[in-house]
Amino acid sequence: MWEIDWQSESETEVTGCALAAALRPGDVIALVGDLGAGKTRLVQAVAKALGVPDEVVHSPTFTLIHEYPAVFPIRHCDAYRLRNPEEFADLGLDELFGMDGVAFVEWADRVTHDLPRDHLRIELSVTGLTTRHACFTATGPRSAEILRQLQG
Image (cartoon, rainbow, N blue to C red; front, side, top):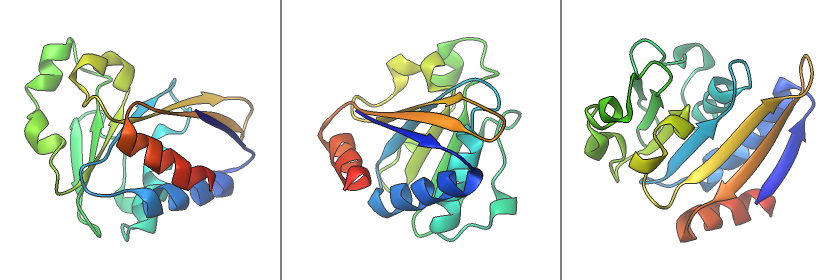
């Protein structure tokens, strides 16, 4: 586990850039946190580091999944509006978690049982007007490698 406090969006961006450098196709990032905790902002920072303009990345709350072309495809999913976990499975998990791209799942705590066993879980919380706390937890060997790269 690794914890970090961000004092500003620019610090979130620095971490997002480091995360982007550590990611490989097939990786899954589970994002957990209340509204406004910074889940989409972190995805924007990673996507920007991989070549996607900030303004292109939006919360997929109503469309459920956005895909962004980058160095490798970035699939950005939001489980907030799902009525039950079965709706998540109906989205096409084979494609979402495809080995050709990376997947970010916002509100991942609602669909935990459908996530791949090895994923990086990032819990975000609001600590002030512009400050956030992030707790990164690895759930397997690949996510542990990502975490080691972030810490190093």
